[in-house]
Image (cartoon, rainbow, N blue to C red; front, side):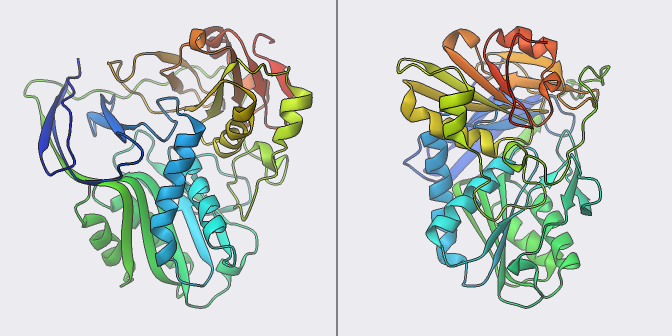
Amino acid sequence: MVIQTPIRADGASARHDLPAGGLEVTITAETKTLGPLFKIAARQNPKRGFLFVSTVLGRHIPVDPRLHRQALAELAGKLSPLMGHGPALVMGYAETAVGLGAGVADELRKALPSQDILYLPTTRHPVGGRQWFGFSEGHSHATEHEVMRPDAHPVLIPGEGKTLVLVDDEATTGATLGGLSSQIFEQMPGHFSRILLATLTDWSDGKNVKTVKAMTGCDDVQAVSLMSGTWTWAPKDGVPAAKLPDGIPPVAPAWEPVYGRHRAFNTPRCGLDGDPGLDCEKLITQLLPEFAPEDRVLVIGSGEHVWSPFLFSEAVQPHVAETGFIATTRSPIVMSDVIRKKMIFPDHFGLGIEMYLHNVDPADWDRIVLFTETDAAGVTPELRHALGKGHIIDGRGIVTEMKEA
């Protein structure tokens, strides 16, 4: 059982008792307009026995698209005065921060329309022939990241005065931010005059800035977040470290992304410099059954494929009574008062791993729309059965009913 103690943003500490240990959390600064930004859950991971579950991200808890958009705007608002005037490269981390990074880049383009801003996420699904470089993330359940080579863009032209923006859901030591920034500096020497670190929650107590400076040699490194604080973790004596879930036989067909095909219905792994081109109006008025004003609609992304699904959730919101957004995930989390529902199913991609959908009760929603980059067979029978209703929009933009094989 996880025992949560309320936390105040006044420097006071609160202790959280989890199965594997005790977590003491202190919040030193917090954005007040979004409500509580996280809850704490137990993580099924030998490297770290806890997880900060964001209430605004839409990964483990369904979020109102307006709240998520507000979080994007507030984070971008902290960044925009620091951006300089040259081109910028914004990067988000797979899988959790792929959509977060895309959204921050989107808000920065609105705030700074004269600047050339390219968004490029890391990925665990490389595009054949487009691999650029890779790096590792120490504490994650899936440690390897790859970065694809983007198409031509002003930020890629040699010359100083550019800005590198790294976006993640949280920072603790800065090692993950340093790993990516150092690789970018190695691949693009002399391009970037400043590095900006943007997170929803910053637990690093300044270590993220120091780490990135040390790993890149860049003097101008600044960090912004919606909340900052510190934590300490005390493992319980005699409690063995949790094991990651075992592999399982693959069920979905093997899948790999293909660059340039149906870009609106796929993750922008090779870069995005504007709107992805998703025709939400056509989906709402022509391809999906008509939405009723009283409908409660849940939109589900899958893995790294979250930005276009989120844009669809925003588009459908004015047509219905309630809209939620969430995504499937690789991250194994223990059931608790924070993770009240947990669907377990074979992955979408034929990799032979478990994936999860947290805190979704189909009875709470009249309509469910699930986006997948694969074809519809990537939504395996176990997930279809658990959801029981709704529609799938696949990586070609084809709409099928959830119950269809």
